[in-house]
Length: 400
Image (cartoon, rainbow, N blue to C red):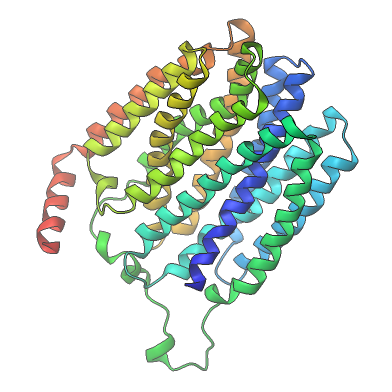
């Protein structure tokens, strides 16, 4: 039971990230910044996150992952205090960048930490992917949800006080639980303490194709569109007179929907190789983006957020699973995952800001619809190959 507590920490850390994104964009929108400048602010954390994720992905391993996570928690605590002490709007670029640094120091090592905890457990990779996706998605939902109400009922710096407290909780908690991923002592009997071999960890999926590359394409389009939503929904909602709290609820619904969908997906053994479920979830994403672009009604925005959350859960689950399931390259693949998240987090706010300034606040959402459709067709075609269908049939027969 104790090891399940580990999955609380991605949720808590993403409360911090979600709150920082919401508060900084809210303050910038209130100061009448242009869409392009808001986009630059939104991508400042992603630029640092991208570079640092790749570097940390090369050095993180079972032995040092927990210590890197601890440093991340301390950094988030100090950074949250700096947001309050130095409130100048332009300094948000600096502190958002530091959020990216400390986020990279958490999420990339945590996936290594997570796999170490689940090694050798029944359905380990699939379960850890579902729990991890649920956890960080739930946290990303709570960040804007809580921040919207804190700003509407109090003051923006209250969000950073919350973040500082979370930094303390994560640091203390990881320190207390890090022994669950520690290497076994060398003096332990081999038959009891021997670490599971990589081939044993992913036995359920042995022989199935390596689709990590497709996950990067699929999630690349998805991460680009979710960065558009997180960067520009407040910019779109402000002229419509939607209160801060309701803006936060819309952004939260994307991630709440994403988190609970991940638990649902975790119950299916082979949907990550099949054709229809990814296609259906991608259609939901395209529909959500279309509603975000065409609607001006808060209840329609709520439905768009839920629909998009179905899609975002699928691509986040998909690329984490296909990275972790590989018996030899999982650490490298995880670092590429974080780079994909980071690169799209840089490009989407900049490109979206240019589009919004030159057209209108709806267009960044609408231009993503055909791109999501293309990703859906590509994934369907790859999954529809006879070799993959034959392998899945053989797996189903052997399990039956």
